[in-house]
Image (tube, rainbow, N blue to C red; front, side):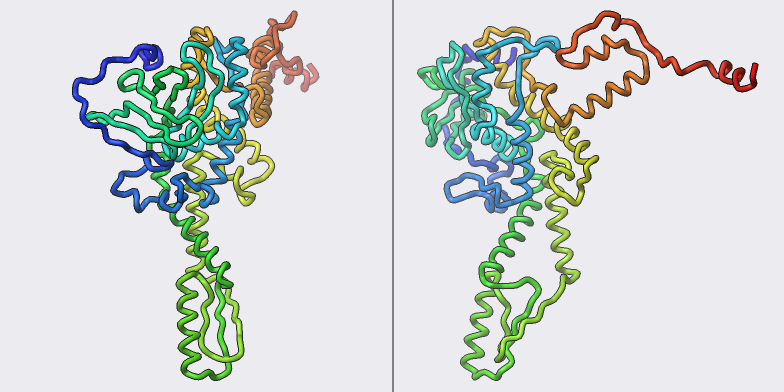
Length: 411
């Protein structure tokens, strides 16, 4: 029996329960063990208030924003045997959640931290009034002796309170007054989604930070400033001390001398190694999030492969991710909406990126001539059967090769 089918009756507490320990949960923290956390990329991405400033790593921000924009804009419906199940109440609630900052926060949390927290607002026995999201930085957890989280405490944001696990081992938690319910959605690919490229993230963040410091201190990359006129010993010492301090901050390299002389240099082999490392690190991040390169860099993009990359992005990343995420939410809402034997999925018909590929596939199927017109029309939403469409058609221009040979010989 699934966690969802048993959610209205909490199972007995486990026989062994020790004094609970509080565990705060911050975005990205689950991707690393506590011992290695101080060396993780998220120490660089985490802000003063505990939230993840993922935009400090531009490739990560670009990839996540691509995924958020594509996923948050999808229409979702209940489907039964490939047919949409009408349900205006659930659709109305999800339409408010669509393209919202709350949904964007949920997607970020699942991708970066390995899980996200959805809040269903309203009496748990009836259709809710709202769907929202709790930021991981506003949340704490209590664990039992088996390391099972049985209580969630929300200390910040709009939905503060204590949420008890409704069934031992489940991912559904509820307030005592039954007016708010938390559903935990895990990353279906990996509980440690960013750990494989933590080194790449640190490399990029360190590189950008160094460049920012250099510019902020008036520095130029690959240049040396020198002074020609003779200086007295105290002045030389003062300028050397100043230069040393500025170099430590990523500033200007200055040598002793008089008149200012600036010499510019091109990129050295060492500089190119660093630049290439940043480029390859960015590719690792794009690949991890699942965004094809033509969608994020003009260097890899042409008109044709951009369209192909968009279709691949939706087919292999956006739609599976959306179906998984909304499937969990839809499973919870189904009995409240009086919907049975149906699953919540993303609508494939209104995605422009998939239209071109779908039309090409229909054209190929027509040319093969093994399907009737009505069979082809059934693949297009809103297209029903037509009279005479059940007759298999073939190309009248094609004749047996023996006939063509006889006509060519004048027989």
